[in-house]
Length: 577
Image (cartoon, rainbow, N blue to C red; front, side, top):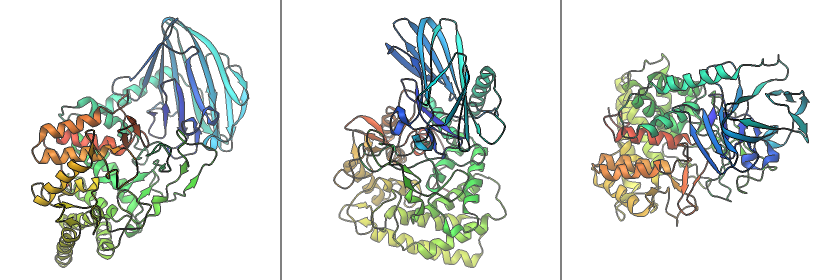
């Protein structure tokens, strides 16, 4: 991934940018080859002959990607980035000759509306403008360009010591054309931005490289102007190859709120934590008892799902979705997540806003009204609503955290305290199976669920409670596969991969039990699955040995940050205080 905190692009090992949405993370894609093929839009910049060896890395702690191709005739380095700290919405691709001489190929096909509409191209010798509707894209090249079949192409040779830079800029077709810019200062400003930001990380950890890369990924997925954190920059990368579990993750989930706050606070990023808290309050403002599961990155609520039938899907995993039908689901746990987040902010000393208590009181009152309703749960079930144990626990968390706030009237406090006791007793009675010696997926069920690992992490019961010990042991026994944790057993759920965040949650539980060596082993199992530049998806297919799901996945990287810091020293924990 390369990105500028307004959008992001995915670059393949072969030098093709196969995914890009402009101008926003959730705009229509203009490169959609990731979910189709080259005809759906891409930008290839690579040696004409297949390289003998290709190695990629980020330039230190930045989002500047360096891809080195070693060929039979020489070695070339392609540097890819989206400028940050500049006014440009652009992609810069710099080609540097390192040894010998290498014949290179440029092949650029812009296809708006998710790979379906080519722009009207106006070609010059070294500049091409593409226009469709409101969108304007300008390619500026140091070599001659050719336009044919609604694509832009170039062939050139790069020798040792030479350097050429290509820029692709976005603008609006009805406004003044964005001016050309010098790539070198933009590269320098981008490198300085990322190095300065990650240079503020000071927390001690035994996994500093992984934590820094996860923090950088999280910051890259945080919209610069609003502070909204995207779950991922992609849509429809499948949870099951060839299946239909292909969802759009280019939105901001309330459920991720406390994970994100914990990560920012424990890593020392208080200002980022404050910005995320403010985003939450803006999302909840107006009618806080009508929270949605997810929002657009600017906290707007309009997410209309539809399918894109002309895209075949990643490895034929169709349909391709835009929007997410889970946005309108009733998911009880999100109310508890918001109150947990606001309580964590209060404990951290982040200044309150005047309307905080009104929003918190409204949410707590809504939990009182709806906590007995079945819902779709943390995993956003598309089946019938159920009384999911995790959802009920998070409703309890909401009331518990509300009671821990400092500004509640005594009469209000007494009524909420009675409700908290009633909720706790109900969950322990109906969500626990004496036969299994474990909490279960839903009231009356006998199934396990990886989300049950969160019960001790949110402080529902202490880690040494026999019911928690039995739950952790049951999950170790039944849901662990190749050192990773599945959301469900293979007999109970779809043939998806192991869920990386759940594996980190198990490591958290084991660390709390004092089983530090085993906890570290689970975390390191997750870290070993990152791709060659340290990025993680949502799941890992233990049979096919590959990452699955939208990529890179914020929740996986949040889990890595929180677990690595939690196993390295004292941290702010959700259930404390």
